[in-house]
Image (cartoon, rainbow, N blue to C red):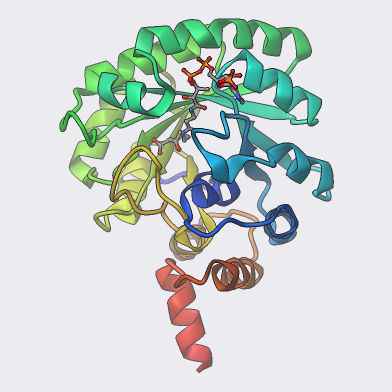
Length: 301
Ligand SMILES: CC(C)(COP(=O)([O-])OP(=O)([O-])OC[C@H]1O[C@@H](n2cnc3c(N)ncnc32)[C@H](O)[C@@H]1OP(=O)([O-])[O-])[C@@H](O)C(=O)NCCC(=O)NCCSC(=O)C[C@@](C)(O)CC(=O)[O-]
């Protein structure tokens, strides 16, 4: 299969990234990050979550962030919503698109959202109805697609089943999450082959954490399988609060550098993205997790 000519990036740094950073970040700094990312040319930004602040305190204040960002035409500003309560709050905050999140592992589902996989799908049903009525698009995540921190290996058929159900409920795209970054390119291709038996490849996205350094290789493997949407996080921020040891998402800078090398268009200005990543890392007091950003910084001396 030939590589796609264009790839759509879903920037999850302000959400998946910041939700697991140790230092709290102010609303103003979150707003600055989102605005820097849109200025760099990212056209889809996951800004925050409308989840319980007792579960994920770092995402409290998402409504304020939505109120203060400068919305750039053509950019989608999305949020994570686990239930109707979160969806209603997101709508009040002017969110344009939401994402629901399920897991392919029962244990992870319990730890992350306090219910079984089947119960989580039931909780999404009224949300999906409300979204349909309001004309809001819903993206679906499946976590632990290539392994679970509690159960180990996960069968691709189990992933396919959850993905199918989310699609049948009305999600327009399914993001396959390698939550703990244990996937390797062969397993990634095998997974996509199985899931794509029921779901068109253009409805699939890849969401790779880089815990074992396999994320870019997995993205390349996914490209070969005809997947052309990838989630990434500026500076490789974050991890998952319910997956101990999970490192951040693949860094957006690294994905863009690789795609540029492959001649694939993303519309993102790497220099501006690098600056955005350096700024947020300075605020967080952490090293930039992007290898490309490290190389650019070193080259500047
Ligand atoms: C889903 C719940 C709420 C269930 O939590 P629960 O305790 O079972 O919920 P509940 O319905 O029994 O309600 C308990 C309390 O939570 C409140 N509540 C209920 N819903 C909401 C809401 N939407 N927003 C704010 N508050 C809410 C509700 O009002 C109540 O408040 P109280 O009466 O005790 O004061 C909880 O487990 C939760 O918020 N979990 C969030 C987990 C999370 O955000 N995880 C990280 C994101 S997923 C991820 O990172 C993976 C992904 C997507 O990136 C892909 C990958 O890498 O794999």
